[in-house]
Image (cartoon, rainbow, N blue to C red; front, side, top):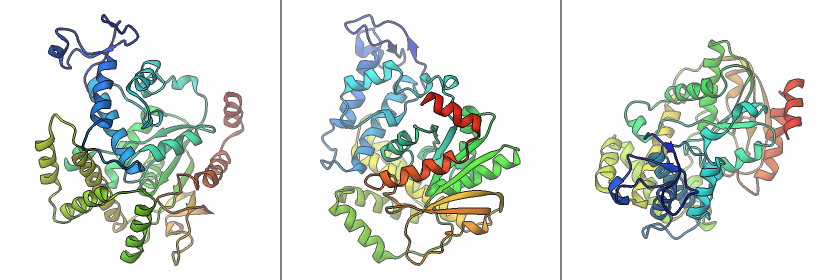
Amino acid sequence: MAQTYLQPEMAERPADPFVNPKLHPSRMQGREPTIYQIVQDAWAKSFGSRDMPRAWEEADDLSRLLRCIQEIESATGLELSVGNFARDMTAADMVKAIVSGKATAKAVDVQADVRPVLFLLPGSLGYGPSMAAFAAGLGKIARVVPIKYPDLASILNGNNTVASMADAAMEQIRRSQPVGHVRLLGHSLGGVVAFEVAARLLEARRSIRFLGILDTTIINEGRDYRETLARTLRRLRANRVNISRIACRALAKATAAIGGEASLAWMLHRYTRGKFNATSFRIRLELQEVLRSRAFYQWLASPKPSLPIGATLFRCNRDGAPHALGWDCALASLDVIPIAGTHIELVVEPYLATNLPLVERAVMQTYTPAEFNRRKAQS
């Protein structure tokens, strides 16, 4: 990423201290753009684009937020936390959050935070607004560190397996918590990535204090296309997705099925380079998710180790599925906790109000007396 510098703004906005000397120098008549101008451009591209869908469901919120944050990160070199942004924020609100350090991951003084660390491994969609809200709820009991998986470009460059995701997670764990008890919580795809990370941690002789699995099944349940259609129709009626997103996902699936993902990604980059295109961005997100899901199914078909540790499975109601969802064969012990909602909606309201305390309780049961006292003192 480009280098970011801190220095006073020399124009009319002295409260904007971030500048980037490599970004559009001519546009400012010799002066580099400030953080306000960078955020304003990103906000206008992401939230003001005419080709953005009008519906306000989470899928479009995710597209807007992720694109806006990626634009700002690319221009400034900052690492931003999506959990501190919201779709109804103005550009000025975003600037205040960034300048104050509240939205800047690198500005957080982790040494002063004595809460136990909990690594959160998201599903195939990645760390979006829903997972960020879930992480914020867990912030009462732990310092939640979200894990980032290889992005689309990295996937197309060969990092297209669960092992690649686990390797990326291990590097982030080493940076965030080089020593001490490790706690992992994975949702959907994140459940198997957490399992692979746990195997690597054991090889490195690290202590795994908690392995939580949010409704991940490792048995091949088969695909009930009637149920898939019914679920899609329910989400359409509830305004959770729209026809545009369904079309983008269908294109991503069809392209990946014939091995044309690299060509599709190249075309999207070639014809939308230098400008914001909501449909193109949505297709890239869907293609990234489809390829991560393919990695998940490839992992299911491969031999898996059996780990000499216990885990906690938070299980949604699945008609006809085994109680342990296959995990009893891969772990020394398993505690199964029923939770509310569906696989997709278990981390959002109204189900979050029921499920969050269950997860909190399971995590806190693994705290040592010293960790519990430190958390209590800081809360």
